[in-house]
Amino acid sequence: MRLLIDSNILLDVLMEREEHYMPSYAVWKSCEKGYADGYISSLTFANIVYIMRKQLRYDEIDTLMRNMKNAFHFADLTMWELESAAKMKWRDFEDAIQAETASRIHADYIITRNAKDFAGSQVKAVTPEEYFSDVFKA
Image (cartoon, rainbow, N blue to C red; front, side, top):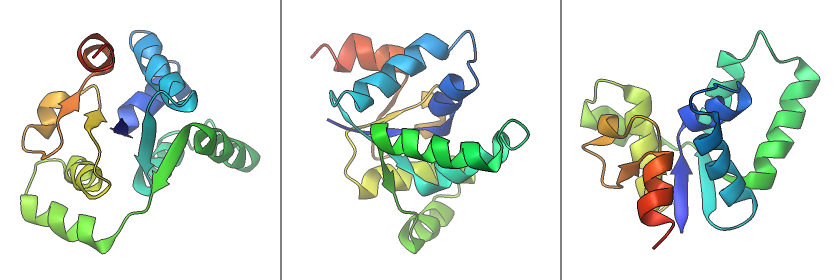
């Protein structure tokens, strides 16, 4: 199963966001152990580094990238995603890019805490809880 992992899932783990940590960590681990093929957009990695810039030293960015490469495939950001996302006219441009990336890599699901923000996506978005209760069990 191919999954596109949204930024908020990764940030839940990296920032140890108490309420969301365990379900997001379980998604990360399922990808790391090969139960699913997890993908992240290159844009996602850049956004994570930007959001965590006050917490990360330069040497930690390299370590973070190596750790993420052990669990996930990186999907390059292409002009196709940018142009397609712009045509979608979604309120959140980054979500539109994620949706188009998921489509391009033929993801089965987008894993996010904000599934409703992906209502117009060709690839179904589910929360970590929905993934484990509905999808993963099947």
